[in-house]
Image (cartoon, rainbow, N blue to C red):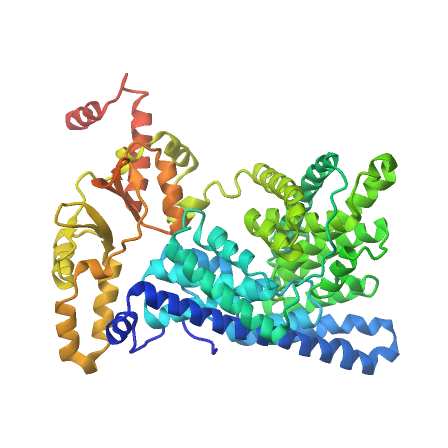
Length: 626
């Protein structure tokens, strides 16, 4: 898969594929899901073999040559990796968008960065193979996500289907990277699409992509899971409070982990006063500095090098590791992961989070056994706490509790671990959400382009209802109307979107200018088939290009609830319908109207200081008199 620009011209678009092979849109999307799953699976097999080759060249062949000079030569390996990544950064400047950037772009409707999946995969392989303290799951997910986005750009699909193919790729990447297809599916539904997108069509496409990618990864990499975990044992129901304590500690570890990464990135960006000199060093040089720091620490603690699965496996198999060593690895792995990520190495944060969770869980169990030996007889062995700790730290770090629970459950294949998992993961995730109340307070506003709202205006959203912000008389078009007629009608009305209705004037879908422009552009780009295209376009009805799998808003619900629903799917508008009849149209809620509504509410609040009870009529009369 070669690097591709954001906009890829193609003469074979989605509409023509449907016409040529006479497939329904749902069938074609399922086939695309299979294609994404197969391509992602092969890409991840290649990625893992690339890591192994680089690891073998640097840490075995190269160290075999220079290792006789002394143990200090280990320091040079991460520096060599940093040098290679620096040279790659110097040439390409960036390695393309991250998964979070792809998700944000799919919701906002535009991707500004170039896709560089091959370059990023090679940079990640060099980073991980040379010992950077990161993980392979992030790049694995991004390989699949890039494949889905690239395919959607080639076919020029709608924004809704772009998000679906992106989610299918992300699910395939995690499924193949961990050999955990169920967790991959829930990761896509929970993180990429959002909690309200558990539609049948979405689940089907994501499932197919994850299953096929997992199957190919098993063929290429083996069927064993990422970790060989011991059988979980429940000693006593009285042990459950100890897991709640583990969840409490895991939230602190997760919080420290995420803040350390942010601090390291700020240091390398020159935003920390004492270290502002780092900001004056060219960014391509930063990986060399990061590699030197990681290599220096690895001289004393080589366990922090690379992905760290071997050390995690030792903790899970109850290999004797002292409390002091576990705590030292916890702190140093956290710091070196922050340095690796901040300095520009390429890799994911899943594996380090699980390393931190395993070391914290094992240390937690051993400390309790040391301080309260009477309680130790009711406790499971330290590996049990290491397993639960992995899920608890991962859940709070990546804000994906369901994915974390299912991932550990899928790896252990033991139902008895579910209760401790749910207790620790739930508490850890909730505490981090409470400790960072402003972390995501405006995230939904940012997703739908309303980040410019002031704090007091954002607070007013809690008091505004949908009926106050909706258009009471939205543009309506019959589903049988031809696309060209609809384009002219919406152009004359100067409206961004219209509701599609049937003969009984009941809602059947929604269409936007983007849908119409994309359809017209698809036909226009195929000038070789002008006659056939003109015929097909003149017979193309509005129902064929409109979105029929839609979410709704209700006039009597708080505006914040509708905005949450809008943000999770990256929508710009929601039809407002009756609660007892979703086909009965009451209005249309558009993103642009929300900011105006908040400004009007702020104006009305300000007028309350001058007018006793400013109603809408009072305000109008006041303005007229002026």
